[in-house]
Length: 458
Ligand code: 9MR
Image (cartoon, rainbow, N blue to C red; front, side, top):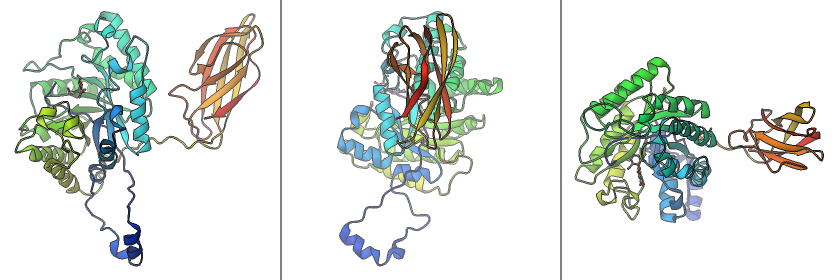
């Protein structure tokens, strides 16, 4: 799928530490005021430069690359948003039906949090990179599997993704302006809106994007997508953004910016989501054109490049990225940085997206049970309440009399079914603000729990 398209995520302002050598620092201490930066000093990294107008600058990444020191140095210095190049896709996250693997995605989210970056989600549903079991499904079985996949994946990452590519590359290339044929499309034309409605319920705070390539100007394909977005907005189907992958060759359509603007005028954000540009005499100027186009469109909330060094790229032979294989900044890097620095002052309609930081450890919690029991069985509803400080997670310990067995649990993970049982939060209900509550439940045979449960904050 080498062509044009984009995807975005919202990064966040990251405070930078100024390192001064001890010797130089001593000399500076006497005259600190002389060295105060000018109010409009140019930012020296992509992320900081983009943040000046409330935008993010991100990159695709892979958790396996985080341990490479040269790579991680550039990642952490330059970017304030990341997106998983592959690790949040259907084949990676649900290798067997209803068996989920979030390892890679979780590692990337943890890295982002630790380094003040925000995270784009890519991608919930796509005709490519489906696991084998999904490829062989059709009809309502595939539709149900899609809905379950969205619920589980968006639910797992709930609250941690600023924008999700809910649906990727569903439109056909060429002049039809219509949908691409795929197993998903054959489940019915409404599959895209079902995906968006499902995603909204699973993660109500994420911006929900449609993402595609070869949409870099006003053409039949981008117009087909435009018509879908307009229809969704008219009918109240939840869509918040459109991603333009922008896998570009050695030219860029003259109406690149106008195309972004017409989507923005529909009332959605636009994001450049997978930017890379074939190396040639005009690589730097094409990068600059894309950057300036985004800056000129109020609702263009950020830019993501599809990798850091040329050697990391899926188009390696074309050297399409901002850093060469040795991690050196290329002329294209400087042109992007200069363009970002040419716009100053926050964009009032596009405030910097917020990275959700986990609360500090050390909070407390309490739990209470309400019981609905009958002869031989019961349903218990447990309310978990954070104390005076926010908590990251919780475990509630319940004692069951002998002869009582738990047969089902919801909104928590149980350590067993008899005796002393620990219930631990699931991905979406562990974080509670100070004084906030959540509920989980379990049912069983026998007489139900006895005594007051204990709650431990984690
Ligand atoms: O860069 C990704 C590459 O590592 C994968 O092998 C490939 C599999 O299809 O997907 C690449 O990323 C694609 C992205 O997910 C969607 N838009 C096109 C990107 C390049 O193919």
